[in-house]
Length: 369
Ligand SMILES: NC(=O)c1ccc[n+]([C@@H]2O[C@H](COP(=O)([O-])OP(=O)(O)OC[C@H]3O[C@@H](n4cnc5c(N)ncnc54)[C@H](O)[C@@H]3O)[C@@H](O)[C@H]2O)c1
Image 1: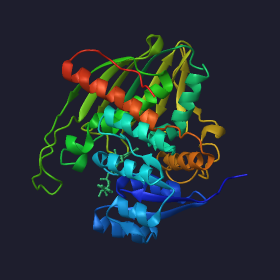
Image 2: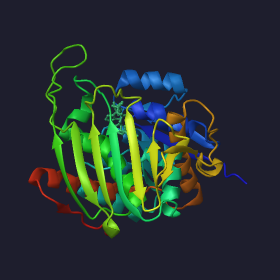
Image 3: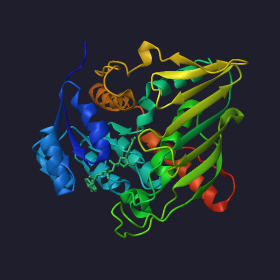
Protein backbone atom coordinates (compact mmCIF):
# COMPACT_ATOMS: atom_id res chain seq x y z
CA UNK A 1 0.00 0.00 0.00
CA UNK A 2 1.33 3.46 -0.86
CA UNK A 3 1.97 5.71 2.13
CA UNK A 4 0.17 9.01 1.57
CA UNK A 5 0.40 10.26 5.15
CA UNK A 6 0.47 14.06 5.28
CA UNK A 7 3.81 15.85 5.05
CA UNK A 8 3.68 19.66 5.34
CA UNK A 9 6.59 21.32 3.52
CA UNK A 10 7.95 24.89 3.48
CA UNK A 11 10.03 26.18 0.55
CA UNK A 12 12.94 28.48 1.44
CA UNK A 13 14.45 30.27 -1.57
CA UNK A 14 11.98 30.14 -4.47
CA UNK A 15 14.35 30.98 -7.35
CA UNK A 16 15.44 28.94 -10.35
CA UNK A 17 15.95 25.43 -8.97
CA UNK A 18 12.94 25.60 -6.68
CA UNK A 19 10.70 26.33 -9.68
CA UNK A 20 12.33 23.77 -11.99
CA UNK A 21 12.77 20.82 -9.63
CA UNK A 22 11.60 21.15 -6.01
CA UNK A 23 8.14 22.64 -6.51
CA UNK A 24 7.04 20.35 -9.38
CA UNK A 25 8.57 17.32 -7.68
CA UNK A 26 6.79 17.90 -4.36
CA UNK A 27 3.54 19.04 -5.96
CA UNK A 28 2.83 15.67 -7.54
CA UNK A 29 3.31 13.60 -4.39
CA UNK A 30 -0.05 12.62 -2.84
CA UNK A 31 -0.28 13.77 0.79
CA UNK A 32 2.33 16.55 0.47
CA UNK A 33 1.02 20.02 1.34
CA UNK A 34 3.13 23.05 0.44
CA UNK A 35 2.36 25.29 3.40
CA UNK A 36 4.52 28.37 2.90
CA UNK A 37 7.14 30.16 0.83
CA UNK A 38 10.11 32.21 2.03
CA UNK A 39 12.25 34.56 -0.07
CA UNK A 40 13.58 38.10 0.52
CA UNK A 41 12.69 39.12 -3.06
CA UNK A 42 9.12 40.53 -2.72
CA UNK A 43 8.31 40.51 -6.44
CA UNK A 44 9.43 36.93 -6.96
CA UNK A 45 7.64 35.83 -3.79
CA UNK A 46 4.37 37.39 -4.97
CA UNK A 47 4.75 35.79 -8.40
CA UNK A 48 5.39 32.31 -7.00
CA UNK A 49 2.55 32.69 -4.50
CA UNK A 50 0.19 33.53 -7.35
CA UNK A 51 1.48 30.90 -9.79
CA UNK A 52 1.59 28.11 -7.23
CA UNK A 53 -1.50 29.12 -5.26
CA UNK A 54 0.39 29.16 -1.94
CA UNK A 55 -0.86 32.21 0.00
CA UNK A 56 1.46 32.04 3.04
CA UNK A 57 4.61 34.03 2.18
CA UNK A 58 7.47 35.23 4.37
CA UNK A 59 10.63 37.26 3.83
CA UNK A 60 12.42 35.46 6.67
CA UNK A 61 12.69 31.78 7.51
CA UNK A 62 12.02 32.24 11.23
CA UNK A 63 8.59 33.70 10.40
CA UNK A 64 7.83 30.78 8.07
CA UNK A 65 8.85 28.24 10.70
CA UNK A 66 6.96 29.94 13.52
CA UNK A 67 3.76 30.58 11.60
CA UNK A 68 3.34 27.45 9.47
CA UNK A 69 5.18 24.89 11.67
CA UNK A 70 6.10 22.67 8.69
CA UNK A 71 7.21 19.04 9.07
CA UNK A 72 9.95 19.56 6.48
CA UNK A 73 11.79 22.36 4.70
CA UNK A 74 13.52 22.57 1.33
CA UNK A 75 16.45 25.02 1.39
CA UNK A 76 17.26 26.42 -2.09
CA UNK A 77 18.93 29.73 -1.26
CA UNK A 78 22.37 30.91 -2.37
CA UNK A 79 24.97 28.77 -0.59
CA UNK A 80 25.93 31.36 2.05
CA UNK A 81 22.35 31.28 3.44
CA UNK A 82 22.14 27.46 3.74
CA UNK A 83 23.63 27.27 7.22
CA UNK A 84 21.19 29.61 8.94
CA UNK A 85 18.19 28.07 7.15
CA UNK A 86 19.25 24.47 7.90
CA UNK A 87 20.04 25.15 11.57
CA UNK A 88 16.80 27.10 12.09
CA UNK A 89 14.78 24.32 10.45
CA UNK A 90 16.41 21.57 12.50
CA UNK A 91 15.93 23.56 15.69
CA UNK A 92 12.22 23.79 14.87
CA UNK A 93 12.10 20.02 14.52
CA UNK A 94 11.93 19.96 10.70
CA UNK A 95 13.40 17.44 8.29
CA UNK A 96 15.62 19.21 5.72
CA UNK A 97 16.38 18.80 2.04
CA UNK A 98 19.22 21.25 1.34
CA UNK A 99 20.69 22.28 -1.98
CA UNK A 100 24.32 21.57 -2.79
CA UNK A 101 26.91 22.46 -1.71
CA UNK A 102 25.27 22.27 1.72
CA UNK A 103 28.03 24.37 3.36
CA UNK A 104 30.50 27.05 2.34
CA UNK A 105 33.33 24.58 2.95
CA UNK A 106 33.86 21.07 4.33
CA UNK A 107 34.03 22.21 7.96
CA UNK A 108 30.61 23.88 7.71
CA UNK A 109 29.10 20.92 5.84
CA UNK A 110 30.43 18.41 8.40
CA UNK A 111 28.97 20.53 11.19
CA UNK A 112 25.53 20.64 9.52
CA UNK A 113 25.64 16.85 9.17
CA UNK A 114 26.52 16.52 12.89
CA UNK A 115 23.68 18.83 14.01
CA UNK A 116 21.15 17.06 11.74
CA UNK A 117 22.09 13.67 13.20
CA UNK A 118 21.88 14.97 16.74
CA UNK A 119 18.44 16.45 16.00
CA UNK A 120 17.27 13.02 14.82
CA UNK A 121 15.67 14.53 11.72
CA UNK A 122 15.90 13.34 8.09
CA UNK A 123 18.59 15.23 6.16
CA UNK A 124 19.19 15.12 2.41
CA UNK A 125 21.65 16.76 -0.01
CA UNK A 126 20.16 17.71 -3.39
CA UNK A 127 22.62 15.73 -5.52
CA UNK A 128 19.98 15.78 -8.23
CA UNK A 129 21.95 14.03 -10.96
CA UNK A 130 21.90 10.79 -8.95
CA UNK A 131 18.24 10.53 -10.00
CA UNK A 132 18.83 10.60 -13.79
CA UNK A 133 17.77 7.10 -14.98
CA UNK A 134 20.92 6.69 -17.12
CA UNK A 135 23.05 7.39 -14.04
CA UNK A 136 21.02 4.89 -12.00
CA UNK A 137 21.65 2.30 -14.76
CA UNK A 138 25.37 3.14 -14.97
CA UNK A 139 25.65 2.63 -11.20
CA UNK A 140 23.81 -0.69 -11.57
CA UNK A 141 26.20 -1.84 -14.33
CA UNK A 142 29.25 -0.87 -12.27
CA UNK A 143 28.03 -2.44 -9.02
CA UNK A 144 26.78 -5.69 -10.58
CA UNK A 145 30.16 -6.25 -12.27
CA UNK A 146 28.81 -5.90 -15.84
CA UNK A 147 31.87 -3.81 -16.79
CA UNK A 148 34.33 -6.17 -15.05
CA UNK A 149 36.99 -4.61 -12.87
CA UNK A 150 36.76 -0.83 -13.08
CA UNK A 151 39.96 0.79 -14.32
CA UNK A 152 39.29 4.43 -15.09
CA UNK A 153 36.53 6.99 -15.66
CA UNK A 154 35.98 10.50 -16.99
CA UNK A 155 33.46 13.18 -16.13
CA UNK A 156 32.77 16.33 -18.15
CA UNK A 157 30.28 19.14 -17.58
CA UNK A 158 30.72 21.90 -20.15
CA UNK A 159 28.31 24.81 -20.58
CA UNK A 160 28.10 28.30 -22.07
CA UNK A 161 26.85 30.80 -19.50
CA UNK A 162 28.11 33.79 -21.52
CA UNK A 163 30.58 36.42 -20.27
CA UNK A 164 28.24 38.69 -18.27
CA UNK A 165 27.52 38.63 -14.53
CA UNK A 166 25.75 35.51 -13.25
CA UNK A 167 24.60 36.79 -9.83
CA UNK A 168 25.59 35.34 -6.45
CA UNK A 169 27.37 32.35 -8.07
CA UNK A 170 30.34 34.54 -9.05
CA UNK A 171 31.24 35.68 -5.53
CA UNK A 172 33.17 33.53 -3.08
CA UNK A 173 31.45 35.20 -0.10
CA UNK A 174 28.04 33.98 -1.36
CA UNK A 175 28.93 30.73 -3.14
CA UNK A 176 32.01 29.38 -1.33
CA UNK A 177 33.44 28.03 -4.60
CA UNK A 178 32.96 28.82 -8.31
CA UNK A 179 32.46 26.11 -10.93
CA UNK A 180 33.81 23.48 -8.52
CA UNK A 181 30.89 24.04 -6.12
CA UNK A 182 28.33 24.65 -8.84
CA UNK A 183 28.86 21.78 -11.31
CA UNK A 184 31.94 20.01 -9.93
CA UNK A 185 30.38 19.01 -6.60
CA UNK A 186 27.74 16.86 -8.36
CA UNK A 187 30.44 15.00 -10.31
CA UNK A 188 32.53 14.50 -7.15
CA UNK A 189 29.46 12.83 -5.64
CA UNK A 190 28.61 10.79 -8.76
CA UNK A 191 32.19 9.54 -8.98
CA UNK A 192 32.15 8.41 -5.34
CA UNK A 193 28.80 6.66 -5.85
CA UNK A 194 30.42 4.74 -8.74
CA UNK A 195 34.04 4.28 -7.65
CA UNK A 196 34.15 4.64 -3.85
CA UNK A 197 35.80 7.36 -1.76
CA UNK A 198 38.46 9.49 -3.49
CA UNK A 199 41.90 8.88 -2.01
CA UNK A 200 43.97 11.73 -3.52
CA UNK A 201 43.49 14.57 -6.02
CA UNK A 202 45.47 17.08 -8.08
CA UNK A 203 44.04 19.81 -10.26
CA UNK A 204 44.03 23.24 -11.83
CA UNK A 205 41.47 26.05 -11.87
CA UNK A 206 41.16 29.40 -13.63
CA UNK A 207 39.09 32.50 -13.39
CA UNK A 208 38.90 33.18 -17.13
CA UNK A 209 36.67 36.30 -17.36
CA UNK A 210 35.81 39.26 -15.14
CA UNK A 211 31.98 39.21 -15.32
CA UNK A 212 31.94 42.88 -14.30
CA UNK A 213 28.84 43.83 -16.36
CA UNK A 214 25.31 42.55 -16.17
CA UNK A 215 23.28 41.57 -19.25
CA UNK A 216 22.24 45.24 -19.77
CA UNK A 217 25.85 46.43 -19.70
CA UNK A 218 25.60 47.94 -16.19
CA UNK A 219 28.80 47.63 -14.12
CA UNK A 220 28.89 45.30 -11.11
CA UNK A 221 31.63 43.96 -8.81
CA UNK A 222 33.98 41.54 -10.59
CA UNK A 223 33.69 37.82 -10.01
CA UNK A 224 36.29 36.29 -7.71
CA UNK A 225 35.81 32.56 -8.34
CA UNK A 226 36.98 30.03 -10.91
CA UNK A 227 34.87 29.47 -14.02
CA UNK A 228 36.93 26.49 -15.21
CA UNK A 229 38.31 23.62 -13.13
CA UNK A 230 39.87 20.25 -13.93
CA UNK A 231 41.24 17.52 -11.70
CA UNK A 232 42.55 13.97 -11.51
CA UNK A 233 41.48 11.68 -8.70
CA UNK A 234 42.57 8.28 -7.40
CA UNK A 235 40.07 5.81 -5.92
CA UNK A 236 40.49 2.54 -3.99
CA UNK A 237 42.16 -0.27 -5.93
CA UNK A 238 44.15 2.10 -8.15
CA UNK A 239 41.10 3.29 -10.13
CA UNK A 240 41.63 6.76 -11.64
CA UNK A 241 39.30 9.42 -13.01
CA UNK A 242 39.66 12.67 -14.98
CA UNK A 243 37.24 15.61 -14.57
CA UNK A 244 36.66 18.87 -16.45
CA UNK A 245 33.97 21.50 -15.74
CA UNK A 246 33.59 24.90 -17.43
CA UNK A 247 31.04 27.67 -17.88
CA UNK A 248 32.71 29.28 -20.91
CA UNK A 249 32.65 26.56 -23.56
CA UNK A 250 30.86 28.19 -26.48
CA UNK A 251 28.60 25.81 -28.34
CA UNK A 252 27.30 24.34 -25.08
CA UNK A 253 24.27 26.36 -23.96
CA UNK A 254 23.16 26.16 -20.28
CA UNK A 255 20.22 23.88 -20.98
CA UNK A 256 21.65 21.56 -23.56
CA UNK A 257 25.20 21.75 -22.18
CA UNK A 258 27.45 18.73 -22.31
CA UNK A 259 27.31 16.28 -19.36
CA UNK A 260 29.04 12.91 -19.72
CA UNK A 261 30.36 10.21 -17.40
CA UNK A 262 32.25 7.31 -18.97
CA UNK A 263 33.49 4.27 -17.04
CA UNK A 264 36.01 1.80 -18.47
CA UNK A 265 36.25 -1.70 -17.00
CA UNK A 266 38.19 -4.86 -17.84
CA UNK A 267 35.15 -6.35 -19.66
CA UNK A 268 33.26 -3.37 -21.04
CA UNK A 269 32.76 0.41 -21.03
CA UNK A 270 29.58 2.40 -20.45
CA UNK A 271 28.64 6.06 -20.89
CA UNK A 272 25.99 8.21 -19.19
CA UNK A 273 24.82 11.33 -21.03
CA UNK A 274 22.37 13.70 -19.35
CA UNK A 275 20.70 14.45 -22.67
CA UNK A 276 19.86 10.79 -23.29
CA UNK A 277 18.48 10.01 -19.84
CA UNK A 278 16.77 6.76 -20.86
CA UNK A 279 19.83 4.96 -22.28
CA UNK A 280 23.52 4.33 -21.71
CA UNK A 281 26.12 3.57 -24.35
CA UNK A 282 27.74 0.17 -23.85
CA UNK A 283 30.61 -1.67 -25.58
CA UNK A 284 32.73 -4.76 -25.02
CA UNK A 285 36.26 -5.14 -26.43
CA UNK A 286 36.39 -4.63 -30.19
CA UNK A 287 32.81 -3.36 -30.40
CA UNK A 288 31.65 0.20 -31.13
CA UNK A 289 29.39 1.81 -28.54
CA UNK A 290 25.70 0.91 -28.90
CA UNK A 291 22.76 2.29 -26.93
CA UNK A 292 21.29 0.11 -24.17
CA UNK A 293 17.82 1.14 -22.96
CA UNK A 294 17.50 1.76 -19.22
CA UNK A 295 15.46 -1.17 -17.85
CA UNK A 296 11.85 -0.35 -16.91
CA UNK A 297 12.55 -0.89 -13.19
CA UNK A 298 15.30 1.78 -13.20
CA UNK A 299 13.39 4.46 -15.17
CA UNK A 300 12.21 5.99 -11.89
CA UNK A 301 12.79 5.68 -8.15
CA UNK A 302 10.83 2.76 -6.64
CA UNK A 303 7.23 3.86 -5.96
CA UNK A 304 7.68 7.32 -7.51
CA UNK A 305 4.36 8.79 -8.75
CA UNK A 306 6.18 10.21 -11.80
CA UNK A 307 5.36 8.95 -15.28
CA UNK A 308 8.75 8.45 -17.03
CA UNK A 309 7.08 9.37 -20.36
CA UNK A 310 5.94 12.75 -19.03
CA UNK A 311 7.44 16.05 -20.24
CA UNK A 312 11.13 16.49 -21.00
CA UNK A 313 12.80 13.62 -19.12
CA UNK A 314 16.05 15.61 -18.86
CA UNK A 315 14.12 17.66 -16.27
CA UNK A 316 11.21 15.53 -15.09
CA UNK A 317 13.41 12.67 -13.91
CA UNK A 318 14.85 15.07 -11.31
CA UNK A 319 11.44 15.11 -9.57
CA UNK A 320 12.37 11.72 -8.07
CA UNK A 321 14.62 13.63 -5.66
CA UNK A 322 11.52 15.01 -3.88
CA UNK A 323 10.04 11.50 -3.82
CA UNK A 324 13.16 10.13 -2.12
CA UNK A 325 13.02 12.89 0.50
CA UNK A 326 9.32 12.47 1.31
CA UNK A 327 9.59 8.65 1.29
CA UNK A 328 12.47 8.79 3.79
CA UNK A 329 10.50 11.21 6.01
CA UNK A 330 7.48 8.90 5.95
CA UNK A 331 9.51 5.75 6.58
CA UNK A 332 11.79 7.34 9.20
CA UNK A 333 14.85 6.07 7.30
CA UNK A 334 18.06 7.75 6.06
CA UNK A 335 17.75 9.80 2.87
CA UNK A 336 19.95 8.78 -0.02
CA UNK A 337 22.03 10.94 -0.46
CA UNK A 338 22.05 12.37 3.06
CA UNK A 339 24.11 15.26 4.48
CA UNK A 340 26.91 12.68 4.89
CA UNK A 341 27.30 12.61 1.08
CA UNK A 342 27.12 16.42 1.01
CA UNK A 343 29.84 16.72 3.66
CA UNK A 344 31.96 14.08 1.98
CA UNK A 345 31.78 15.82 -1.43
CA UNK A 346 32.95 19.04 0.20
CA UNK A 347 35.92 17.25 1.77
CA UNK A 348 36.95 16.26 -1.75
CA UNK A 349 36.20 19.76 -3.10
CA UNK A 350 38.38 21.36 -0.42
CA UNK A 351 41.19 18.91 -1.25
CA UNK A 352 40.89 19.85 -4.96
CA UNK A 353 41.06 23.57 -4.06
CA UNK A 354 44.15 22.93 -1.91
CA UNK A 355 45.75 20.88 -4.71
CA UNK A 356 45.07 23.64 -7.26
CA UNK A 357 46.46 26.30 -4.93
CA UNK A 358 49.58 24.33 -3.98
CA UNK A 359 50.09 22.75 -7.46
CA UNK A 360 50.54 19.25 -6.03
CA UNK A 361 48.71 15.99 -5.15
CA UNK A 362 46.67 16.22 -1.94
CA UNK A 363 45.38 13.23 0.09
CA UNK A 364 41.65 13.35 0.86
CA UNK A 365 40.84 12.68 4.53
CA UNK A 366 38.17 10.13 5.47
CA UNK A 367 34.76 11.32 6.68
CA UNK A 368 34.43 10.51 10.36
CA UNK A 369 31.04 10.27 12.01
N1 LIG B 1 20.81 20.41 -7.47
C1 LIG B 1 20.90 21.08 -8.60
O1 LIG B 1 20.90 20.51 -9.69
C2 LIG B 1 20.98 22.58 -8.55
C3 LIG B 1 20.76 23.36 -9.69
C4 LIG B 1 20.76 24.75 -9.55
C5 LIG B 1 21.04 25.33 -8.31
N2 LIG B 1 21.31 24.54 -7.25
C6 LIG B 1 21.57 25.11 -5.92
O2 LIG B 1 20.34 25.66 -5.44
C7 LIG B 1 20.57 26.84 -4.69
C8 LIG B 1 19.82 28.00 -5.33
O3 LIG B 1 20.24 28.15 -6.66
P1 LIG B 1 19.28 28.85 -7.75
O4 LIG B 1 19.90 28.59 -9.06
O5 LIG B 1 17.88 28.47 -7.54
O6 LIG B 1 19.50 30.37 -7.33
P2 LIG B 1 18.50 31.59 -7.56
O7 LIG B 1 19.31 32.82 -7.39
O8 LIG B 1 17.70 31.41 -8.80
O9 LIG B 1 17.47 31.45 -6.33
C9 LIG B 1 17.85 31.64 -5.00
C10 LIG B 1 16.69 32.32 -4.28
O10 LIG B 1 17.00 32.38 -2.88
C11 LIG B 1 16.54 33.64 -2.40
N3 LIG B 1 17.22 33.95 -1.15
C12 LIG B 1 18.39 34.61 -0.93
N4 LIG B 1 18.68 34.65 0.38
C13 LIG B 1 17.66 34.01 1.03
C14 LIG B 1 17.38 33.73 2.39
N5 LIG B 1 18.22 34.11 3.36
N6 LIG B 1 16.23 33.08 2.68
C15 LIG B 1 15.38 32.68 1.73
N7 LIG B 1 15.61 32.91 0.39
C16 LIG B 1 16.75 33.55 0.06
C17 LIG B 1 16.82 34.61 -3.53
O11 LIG B 1 16.05 35.80 -3.42
C18 LIG B 1 16.46 33.76 -4.74
O12 LIG B 1 15.10 33.93 -5.10
C19 LIG B 1 22.09 26.98 -4.63
O13 LIG B 1 22.57 26.35 -3.49
C20 LIG B 1 22.56 26.23 -5.87
O14 LIG B 1 23.88 25.75 -5.75
C21 LIG B 1 21.27 23.19 -7.35
